[in-house]
Image (cartoon, rainbow, N blue to C red; front, side, top):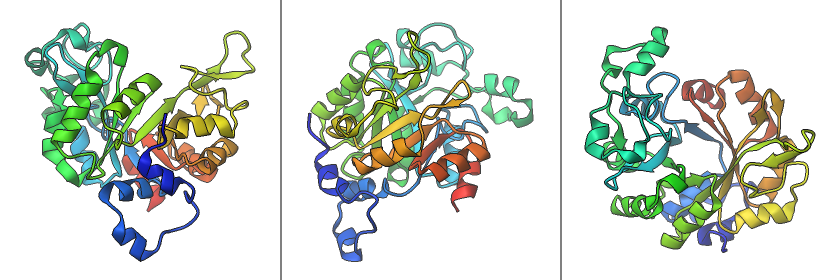
Length: 311
């Protein structure tokens, strides 16, 4: 495994100070994107999904209007090979359909209503325009915002989405999202990230982790896929192993009311060239707490709340 080629040269100076104006001027768009990860990132989780139906154009329009740093989304693949923007493995929760998303063609998915559920669940935020919202393709999202946005894309449930990485990378390249510094690809599955790297090793990758108490010993935290040890056991070598292929880490910070990472975790990750982006944080007091801990970015359903704190 090899560290991202552009990040290698930059990681030694991560968070060490601003580059000179001349150096910044000489950066490629992709280098500039990686440099920008040194600054705090506002990541709109499934768009402004606290205000509009998640993963719909309305949610992304609102987040983009607020000038967030990244539009976050989950990529999955349809039965006929199209890349769509949708979180759940099943369509039941956020549409008027039933079944696994991968069992449907794009035409069948386009017939679904993915907005009315939000109105029914959020009477205070209901909007008649949300009704009838369609599932988006990644092409449609790119065609709407183009290079005027950055995108934080998860390869969702790759074991249920065979061919996803190939289809995703092809779409990114067709829209020139990589060399223009427009995209990060995230996943809990290290194998999926390495597959993306094999297809295009310029794509910056984010390793997602989830820490929770071990079933054998609840006093000991473990990581969901085993990609790192638990926070109490993680060391520089563990972070460096992730930094060999990834440009950052995305992590939970709380499990059933208890914090699972602390400022030392963030500091140590940073010292090993890895910005830490924390998901999914919706309350202002928690946002402030994590910013004080040194988090390098937050995923949130309410980017408007976070933007007020970083202005």
